[in-house]
Length: 115
Image 1: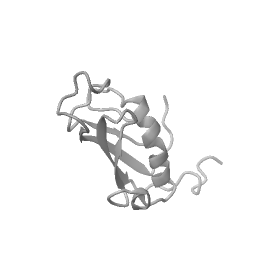
Image 2: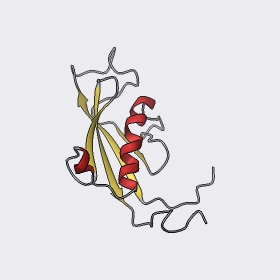
Image 3: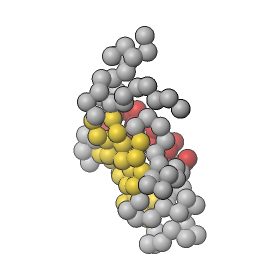
Image 4: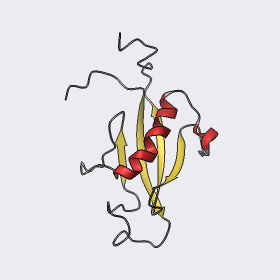
């Protein structure tokens, strides 16, 4: 892999809690635990152990991440701030908080990075 583009945002996804109970066993297939954190810029989020986030959760997160990348305000879709939103996994098990951090790099399309 040869990453050549400086992305505009870094994303952190933190496990906030479960909708039922306090343990992951026999509940979350990915084994999420409260306090687990994943980070990424454009690629899929990974945790400190190098494990990737659940693919079902990524299907939920990607459109939200794209909304941020295109200048959106997450409060417009129920977020608790411009760059923050709590989401529940598609299985209805785990609550995650997505937080975006602007890195100060230009939007690659407006900045003509693909020309």
